[in-house]
Every structure is written in structure tokens, then in C-alpha cells.
Image (cartoon, rainbow, N blue to C red; front, side, top):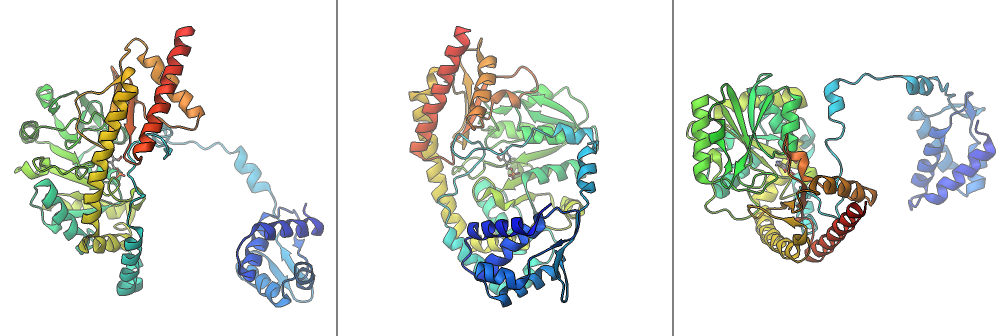
Length: 490
Ligand SMILES: Cc1ncc(COP(=O)(O)O)c(C=O)c1O
């Protein structure tokens, strides 16, 4: 039970901690957080405004205004001539909630460990460099956009997405991926994850058979599994997914691929293999889901999107701004055969009520139209290529003693395989656990296999500069060396 003396001490403490230069705001925040923390079982009478004013050197008028505001917010009540009171709390709700057993749906329990926050100071996989982002230009674009569009920018958007943004995306993809798509084929969504979910809901009835690359992008694997698809994992060769191995499979409904740079192996699919997959899909009456997450990493003059060559129009193309811009924007897009745009849009609106925030969409559209995005992309492509080269250099210098690289294409992450096959499984396990104790999350390779896994890591280096890549490589090498010694002396 709080008493008035404690109340005064805590309020003094809150005021000392609060650095806001505006006295009224400082007093309001300090008093509000204190009042909200009171758990008394009887209504608590707060000190009078005169007393607070004299104790803390705040004008009585300010204290009165703050008390009135807290009353307006329903946090306390005031009785003329008697004072200001905080409502009693019974504590029963908290008690019973603690004892409550919540039965989670099994699918929800399975998802528990799938997504984790990665540390930014190690080989975090999937995270772009944002330190070079032209924030000032972005901010100026935002100001101009807010000024010219006004408040309506915060209305919901049930359309396929902002027209200018769709136009800019169509232009971008046509330029870099050799497609000829129109803005009407572009549907703006929040993420690749949402795009894949929509593919599942709109195109794939439960138990549909879906072919995935093996090793796979685990977010796709778990999502489709969660949606009760029957997954067929097919291995890779130097040209990409070995679609020839799937020839005997019947009732295939979709093939999910990451052709521009297979995740996690880094293999780039050959043009011939893309054509084989297109013919396979046509023969089996299946869709192709093309996750082109890595499309703009390097200039790929000769590399075409599957979408570009698919004259049967069975391909659903997914692009994302997570890798090249800002992952927290949560902005991605689907490029669809025209007839699929409406059903996809309907389902997106059904689950989300709207397209992604118009504020972000319009801002990005103008950022692209003004040429800022193209300049940034060009600069980042050069930086990422240098980082890839630095990674290979330091890999050869340090990690190559324990790990090897296989066929891959320059990318923002690389799969590294343990050389010592006898120790590989133990080592991977021990290292991930050891790193965890140091607060480092390592993306281990075996998680991307359904069976017969390979062991090692997927190391992302796009967010690290040369010095950081070297430091992380050294640290990882030392961790492996220490772990091998430990395992060998057991
Ligand atoms: C294979 C793959 N696809 C897509 C994405 C982008 O996902 P999202 O758009 O959901 O951020 C990533 C990001 O790491 C990825 O690795």
C-alpha cells in the first residue's frame, strides 16, 4: 500500500530521471507514470496541488493543469474541496490471469522458435547496410509528400497500391529483370512473407503439393507447412533446382524458387533450367512462385527473371524492398498475371483491411521518381560487391582452415560448410550454443534441410564493412578452434 511519503519520494525520483526541458511535460510524465503504478486496494488520495507546488517548485497552476489532464484521461478523479484520488485496484484480475492456462492452437506452438532477432554486429543474415542510406533526402521527400498530399495520406488504401509506386516498380523490374510488365500487374504488399501467404491462400488449396528447393528458405518452408501444404524438397545442382528429379511427381500445384540467388546455397539458376521449370509447370498445370529477393544485389545484365521468360503466364513474381532499402519499411510487391491481381488484392484486403501504409508507399514512390533510389541502388551494388570480395578474402585467410565454400554466386550471404564431416554436427551444435552465450546469433546451415543435412553456417556480411568482416571472421575462427579443442579433449 503506497502512502503519501512514498508517493513524494517516488515523484521526486521520477522528476530527477526525466530530462524533458519543458517543465509541464516533465511534471505530467512523472506524475502520470507514478499514479498508474499505484496498486492500493482503497482509493488513494494524492497530495494537494499546493503541497506539490511548494515541494517541487512548480507553479500551482501547472500542477492543477496536470491533475485536470489526468482526470480527463480517466486516470484519477477529483472532488471539489476534497482532493484528487486514484481508483483502488482489486488485484484479482492479475491473480486469475496468472493462473489461467491458455490453450494455443498447435500451429501457433510450432512457430515459437522460427523468428528471432539477429544481432547486428556479427554475421547477421538477411540484413542490409543502412548506414549509407540518404536519410536527409528521405526526410525531405517525406516533408514534401506530407505537405502536398495532406491528411488523406492516412486513409486506408483498398487499391492494389499507390499508382505512382506501381509505375516505378514496373519500370525498375523491367529495367533490371528483363520483364515487360505493366503497373496494373503490380500489387503492393507488406512483405515477401505476406506475398507467399497470399499465394497459399489464393492459389493453393490445403494439401496441395508444392516443390521447394533443398536446402530451402526456411520462412517459405515453414509457412507452406503451416498452411498444410504437402512439401516436396528437391535437391540442387550447379544450375539450380533439379526439376528433372520431379518429373515423376503427379499433382504438383506449385514450384517455389529463388532463382537469382538460391537461398541459402547462393547458386544462380541457369537460363536453361528456368526454361525447364517453365515447361514443367505448363505440363503439370502448376504455378511458379519466384522469390526474387536478391535481384538487384548486382547488375545482372544477362540474368532474366523466370517471369520474363514464362509466356504461359504461370509465374507469380515476388520482390521486396527489405534487402536494398530499409527492412523495417515492410514493403514488398507481387507481380502477377493480370487476371490474378483482383483475387490477390481481395485476399490482401481481407486479411489486412488495406494496402500497406500510404504514407510509406507515396514517400517511396517519390523517392524513386526523383532518382534517389536509383542512385542509392547503384552505390549499394558497388559496396555489396566489395564486401563480398572482402568476405572471400578473409574467409580464405582465416575460416578456410575449417570450412569450405561451394558453387555460389556473389550475394549478401554465403553458406559455409564444415570440412571435418565427422565432427560437423557436434561442432555446429556446440558453436551455436556457445555463440548464444556470448549474445551472438549464428544462422546454422542444417536448419535449412528436411533430411540429410549439411552442417556449417550461413554468414551474412552485407551490413558489415571491411574491418567488421575481418573482426567477425577472426572471432568465428577462434570460436571454432576453441570448440574443436574442447570436443577433442573430451
Ligand atoms: C529468400 C528470401 N526471400 C525474401 C526475403 C525478404 O523477406 P521480407 O520481404 O519478408 O522481408 C528474404 C530476406 O532475408 C530472403 O532471404
